[in-house]
View 1: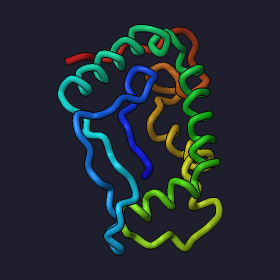
View 2: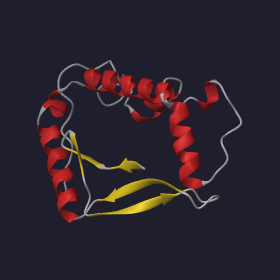
View 3: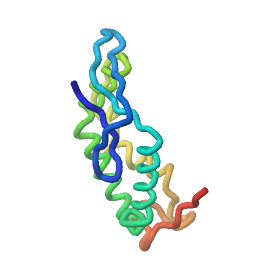
Length: 140
């Protein structure tokens, strides 16, 4: 059976327990999901903080955008797999529309950028328009 494990600090780790991911219409288990306990969550938060204070945090906005675009391209290449996984997980029927509107990465990235990133006229430029390190992220 397919195992869905936690990804923390660049590696997959077992959970504190597991549960079956069941296809609702058939009742058949499609995967075994590893649950993250407090230690795993704390490790994940520490790994994210280390990444922010390390290589990711030292990247420019342009570099971050390039990586996010590449990630969106990877999502596009696996769109069929992602749809099948969602169908198996939720029992929802596979979407009928095919083509550009269904794409999750490349076609939606420019629209997402226009809504999420500041423009040249506002606070410091958007994706690919700013050089130097990104502004620090506020912490609670």
